[in-house]
Each structure stands twice: as structure tokens, then as C-alpha cells.
Amino acid sequence: MVNIKRYNLSKQKGTTGTKYKFLFFSLSILLFIVFIFNIGIGSVNIPFVETTKIIFQHITDSTNGSIIWKIRMPRAIASLLSGGYLAVAGLLLQVFFRNPVVGPSVLGISFGAVLTVGIVMLAGLSFGIMSIHPLFISFTAFLGSLSVMFILLAIISKIKDIATLLIIGLMVGYLCHAITSLLVAVADKHMIKGFILWQLGSFNGFSWDEVQIVIIVGLILLSGTYLLSKPLNALLLGEDYAKSMGVNIKLFRYLIVFFSSSLAGLVTAFAGLVAFIGIAAPHMARLLFGTTDNRQLIPGVMLLGAIVTSLCDLIARTAFSPVELPISAITSFFGAPIIIGLLLRKKSAI
Image (cartoon, rainbow, N blue to C red):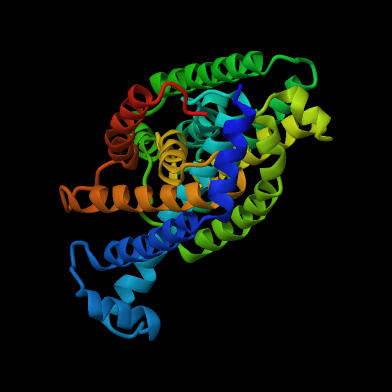
């Protein structure tokens, strides 16, 4: 449990000081710079000045303009939004479970998406389905995530110990993974390659239609998430304190699982598995901002998640170009050392 005095001091420092405003502004500038580099750098390098000119003047009739607006811009926006969503989902779950190593994948949400995509892609050939539209795959993945989420919501009403929910979520994830492994074992080898590539995660091939869905659904979920910031602050001091402050704990549990699962499921549906962002970004935000106030951590962690994911996507595209690396491999190389270092440096992350 977090000490009340410590919590109040952290909260006041973060809320009224200029440090938070300066950091938030600096991260916003850094995000913009990373965004521009993500658009300008690739197999065809476009100078920084020309890149900004194409963006602000909306030039689409040139070769470079077509590359930026039809290929790189949707991908860059998708990567920064996905990173932000995963980071916020991870923050919610770490506060909820009071566990510094909890991330969006622990409740089995991502594995539910992988399972339903596996059923469609691996079993589709058996039913004569030779090609599947990417939007249908994304819809199927999101449906799988929501299915696992609803199972967890049904379980919440029957248990009081949130640690039990964590264990059940892990077990559901293992079951989904086991079924997926069986599908891979018996599937046609021509279908396995496409499924494995999807499962490894990538922002390649994002269309503007998909970006619009990610923006609209994600912003709705983020708005609801931010409304939970004050109850989350109360929960830091324990459920008894939260109850004394008028928080409906049962409803609050439903909302946290719903918003965190929906954000993680939305990203997995369109980009596949993206590892470690939801675990690493909240730690980085707490260390950088020096506060536990979730009213500030939610915007801050979204910025950090967006920056890290955009950088990782840039590395995935360019490190061994024209071969593209799986995004989860890059985020794992980036996130795992950060988690190890922070856990060694701080005895308690929350």
C-alpha cells in the first residue's frame, strides 16, 4: 500500500509544478520529431524540409507525396496511437493489480485475438476461403479480444480477490495459446506463414480506413479511461480508502478491465502482438514525472508509449531494409532491459 503522505506530496508536485508542463511539452516536441523521421526515413529517404512541406501543404501529386500520404503517414499514426493505447492499458492494470510487471497481455486478451485470427486464417482454407480481407481479420481479432474480456467480466462478479482474477486471466491466455498451437500443428503449411507473420506484429499495410477506426474507437476509450483517474488515485491507497471516498469497487473493477482490455484488443486486432510497451511505459512515466497522480500519468504515459513504439517501428523498418523485423522483437529488446533496470533501481514501482 502506498503511504498517504508520500502520495499527497507526489500528487501536489506533479499537479502544480512547472516540471510537469515542461516535460509534457518536451515529450510532445520529441514525439513530433520522431513522427517526422518515421515518415521521412525509409527505402526512399525524403529530406526533413521536404517531408514537412509535403505534410503541411498536403502534397499528394508527387512521388514522394504519394509515398508519405498513402504508405508512411497511416503507418506512423497507427504506431504512435497503438503505443499510447497499450501504455495506458498497462498503467490501468498495474494500478489495479498493484503489480509493477503486469501488462495488457496478462489477462489473456491478446491471446484471445490470436486464437480467433488463427481459426479464421488457418481453418479458412478447409472451408474454401482462399483470401481474407485485412479488415475482416482485424474485426475477428477484436471479437476474440472482446470474448475473453466478457469472460473475465463474468468472473469478476464471483470473486473478491483480484490476484485470483490475474491467475485466471493467465490461465485463459494459456488455454487460448494451446488451442492456437493445435491449429498450427494441423494447418496447411501455406497458411501458417501468413498467420505467424501476423502474430509477430507489424504496422505495415495500415490503410486510412483502419487508422480512422483506431482513432475513433481509441479516443472514445481514452475519454472513459481519463474519467477513472481520480478513482485510480484513491485505489492507490487501498480498496478500503477508495470505498470511503465513495468509489463503487465492483463497478470500478468492471470498468478497468473493460477499458484496458478494449484498448489492448484494439491494437492487437490491427497490428498483432506488440510486446512490453504496456509494461515499460508506465514505469518510465513514473520515474520521469515523479508522481503517482494518474490524472497526469495517463497523458504522460501515452506520450511515452507513442514515442517508444514509433522509434521501435522505425528500427523495425530500417535496420535490415528491405527486410522488415517483427515489431514485438524490437519492443522486447527495448523494453526488457528497461524493466530489469527499473526493478533493480526501485524496490517498489507503485
